[in-house]
Image (cartoon, rainbow, N blue to C red):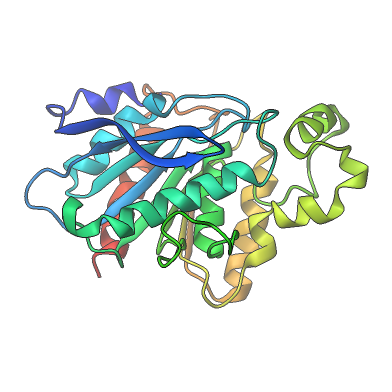
Length: 271
């Protein structure tokens, strides 16, 4: 997805297949890309897309390498998929991943107060949730003493308000994710929408979205941007002409935006 960025430098040290959770008896893994010197002590959770029903953390390798080169640790994570795991299972998974990093901060050489998140599409949605809310499952047995909220979010065309902008053709996806029809899911849809949680604790956000996106309407990002500005939360948005639901490595504006987004994460997490 970001292959061109991977050619800019030698691959960093990576710990593959690190187990961070045993949710419902399933080992959930992350790949940890260690920062190139000098390290900043900052870390970024990296979340792949796939409509909450598929995808692979290895798809995010190029952006993880870019984060590593900037001096931050990147953790590209696996999470459970619908329909086997319905909402909010995958939300709990990404929160557990943040708590894992905090619980192991000393071993990983990171500052537990300097953790951000990024993701694309469904991964952008989950990254945004990490920036607007703390631990959902108060009964969790996995690192319960550590918070789940992150301090900055790089959102790449993530859904932000599941109650608007999506046509009827998405009804089957809503059914798959939520386990019941969209018309009967108002409570779950509100709970799954990052905009529902915006308050004075909300993390700053950097948005990248293509103006020709046929999957996640660009109105989703513009609505998020408006809500954040009204809330007084820092937001920077890059809307790119001709860009669809992808990050084409041949598009200079896309490469510039992603590079700027990672630089922004670094600056924000190391203030």
